[in-house]
Amino acid sequence: MEATITLTLSEAFHGTKRQLKGGAVSIPAGVKSGSKIRIRGQGQPDPMTQQMGDLYLKIEIQPHSFFRFDGENLTCEVPITPDELVLGGSIAVPTPDGPVTMNIPAGIRSGQSLRLKGKGWPQPKGGGRTDQLVKLMVVPPKNLTPIEQECYEKLKAKS
Image (spheres, helix red, strand yellow):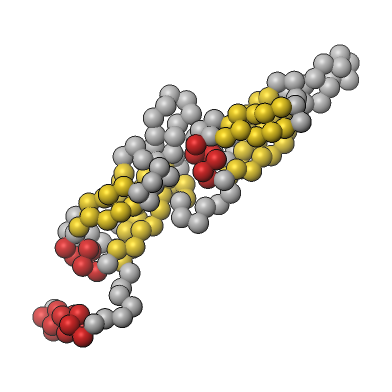
């Protein structure tokens, strides 16, 4: 017998317990959509022996507003300013464990991805974590001050 269980990204990342008719079930950290968990003796009875069969829980993870999967890695898009794009700098990047500081090299391109090694999805077998890929997207300022406007115009004139 098979049943589908839907988890939030946080529940799938950290692991959770769910209450079923036959008792509590532990969902290990790092399960992914499509994974199956076998629960012995919680399925349908065998018509010949009346022995209870196994239940297979198929895992589905709800879409998240910020994080996505790219193969085994976790991905996200982070906004950066034009000056961070040109000059580089440090930014705070959300991870499932909380924000970490990432250094942006000078001259990076909008849409380019950087890697946070070992900050991605937990690996249920063998331990460790995948990487988190951070796609940097330039967001232009909404309201320029007169000084900023002047600086951009000077840059444009020199290009």
